[in-house]
Image 1 (cartoon, rainbow, N blue to C red):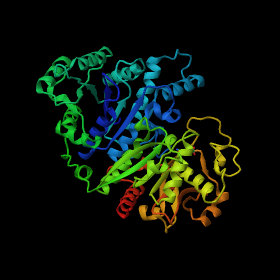
Image 2: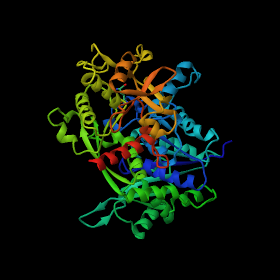
Image 3: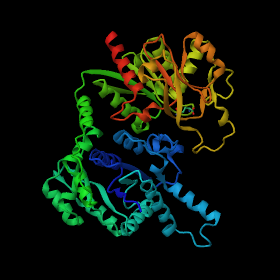
Amino acid sequence: MSSTKYIFVTGGVTSSLGKGIIAASLAKLLQARGYSVTIQKLDPYINIDPGTLNPYEHGECFVTDDGAETDLDLGHYERFLNVPTSQANNVTTGRIYQYVINQEREGVYLGKTVQVIPHITDEIKRRIKLLGNTGNYDIVITEIGGTVGDIESLPYIEAVRQLKWEPDFDCIVVHLTLVPYLATSGELKTKPTQHSVKSLLESGVQPDILALRTEYKLTEGVKDKVALFCNIAPKAVIQAIDADSIYEVPILMKEEELDIVVLDKLSLPHKNEPLLTNWKEFLFRLKHPKHKIKIGLVGKYIELKDSYKSITEAIIHAGAFNETEVEIDWIHSESVTNKNVKEKLSHLDGVIVAPGFGERGIEGKIITIKYVRENNIPFFGICLGMQCAVIEFARNVLGYADAHSTEMDKNTSNPVIYLMEDQRSITDKGGTMRLGSYPCTIIENSKVFEAYKKVAITERHRHRYEFNNKYKEEFEKAGMKTTGINADHNLVEIIEIPQHHWFVGVQFHPEYKSTVTNPHPLFVNFVKASLSAKEQK
Ligand code: GLN
């Protein structure tokens, strides 16, 4: 029997309260006390995974080492804990149903009627226990997506109710709600929280801890009132006040003693006092920058900033490392034209061209890259951003005016980016890209070697198209070097222009691996290069 303890994090009143950040902050504190912790996200939607979702729906799709396309909260878990997650850390209703329906087709249920209870709830419970059963974790935190009271969350809450009654299953429930401030009466209101807890109670679940999101400091009176109405001890009512940075939340949660309340409820020893020395050092650098730069982020989903969550967080990590405040200038790729490119980009110290799919905004990205290449502005192209750099170079340096990726133009006579061999027969969209961690070998005399300081790296991928090796020699001769190769399949993973101040394109997604304690070397060196470019201006 596993001795793993479980913590469920549910949300009430509204969505977007930051359950992921609270879960990650709690995990950070428990980790700092000496516990091994992992966090899991259960998403109530019917997609098998977020890989097929438009970023406008729930923000970016985060990719794990084992190639799972997951919710962006897993990115927060990794950035906070500095421990990789995997497919088991993200489960959707779609995945649960798919599994149960497949079992039904195989005849596993022996003629029984297959129902939400017990079959769906059993499968939810099995998924919750999977991580604990590995024996790798003292504590598993399971964040339940959505808001309590939603129809689609019901089977999850029911699974939690059942687990609370299972012998030998040790768990607690942390419920995060909102305490709104009414400006006209100058009051913080607790009623929505009371109703939200009532709704949980109707499902048979009494929360053990309440975390209250609030714009203003909660008075003891407010905490006592919530405690009284919600059957909770006052010290288990935790204030979760708005913070300037998500990275301050672990410190705020420590001040509220969330970790101690949790350990006491789980009957676990407090172990070490969480010092969080590195974490605080990072926060200090973040808050006391010595320099400032402006980076352009060119993409087509910029109306929803969460679409680029890992990239913006990686920039924050790299900025703090370089004691540099990085202001992001969000540039819609559809808005960039030959006419306005100078006006849009000339003031920038560096430019990132973002990942993406499809035709929309592609010409704006290519025009952007031409401008930064010709004007020696540091450039970092990620996935589609790298592919656009290849297309731009082919068109404007090699003189292939119609060069393109076959993703955008199937009939181009110069497919400098084309579909990978093993992608050609694939018709299903979900989970079929080149996904997850792959090795890459770096050439020593290169900007990327300066950053990584080693030749063997692994990075995470999410794409179908690749550099067409037929053109490799021509590119090299004309000054665009391929400085990183996947040796197993002879795939170009990195391109650079050595003559340029800093011009690097990567076929992988370095942003997924940047954490607070391990800022990603490419982002670190891109920020450094942008800073030096600014100083040379
Ligand atoms: N659309 C491109 C491909 O599939 C790039 C993908 C991406 O930027 N993640 O290869």
